[in-house]
Amino acid sequence: MSKIIEIEDYTWKYLNTQQPALNKINLTVDEGSVIGIIGPNGSGKTTLAYSMDGLIPGQYNGIKQGFVQVFGKEVESYAKGELQRLVGVVFADPEAQFTAMTVEDELVFGMENLGMSIAEIQERLEWVTELTDLTHLLEKPPYEISGGQKQRVALAAVLAMTPKILILDEPTSMLDPLSRRRIFGVLSRLKEEQQNTIIVIEHSLENLIPLADRMALLYEGELLLEDETQPFFQQTEFLLAKGVFPPGVVKFFYELMKAGRYSGNLPLTVETAQSELVKILTGLPKQETKSN
Image 1 (tube, rainbow, N blue to C red):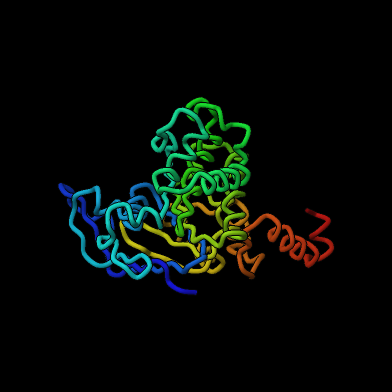
Image 2: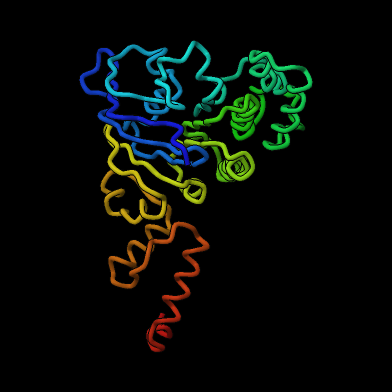
């Protein structure tokens, strides 16, 4: 895989602050991969997202050291609006992105600004509304639909412009469990069908873990841990110490491991956990099985 984003010794400090928001970050993102970025509030996750999109330093004042390259080019070297055609950002508050009075107009707005033909706009509109299940909402005002629907509209509006890189900044923070699954269902389809490079900043990990190829932990502006998803969560004790709370199945098997009842890799999904639990139970002595 080719490296689509390369961040080297990157430090960013906002003006009038004492400490840098990000300190000596080194991170690469491979084309077509999905990376999850996690960490406590205030750890620099959103600053990192804005740095990859060029919003930093484009729209924020501060002091920068190091390099942030997208497609081999420093973000500051792109002409105004050029990088945003390659990198799409979906914010935690979808209403912050709305500009139109109907869902359809919202989805079409960005494509019109890119100068697409009517035929191309129509084709992409049909594709993105089917993908995000918004066809029945096209005539609705985006401000009057549910939270989950708003988030899907914000996501669809970005996807309609077909950016090579998609960054989602806590896309499910205000959603119920069903809406969260629907958002991640869309991302799963994008990974399988479009091979998009997807970067997700998220606190709720149950849906992110099965999707992510790699995970990164930010803490107080520093990148403390970055690895493939499976070995990343084998560092559960370290993650807990840094205020990160893995899904229940991971914590359950972590406790089993501490008690000497389990020695394999910590399972990351309910399905894997069920399989491992059956192995544990069938391996217990008969009298112990009866007593439990």
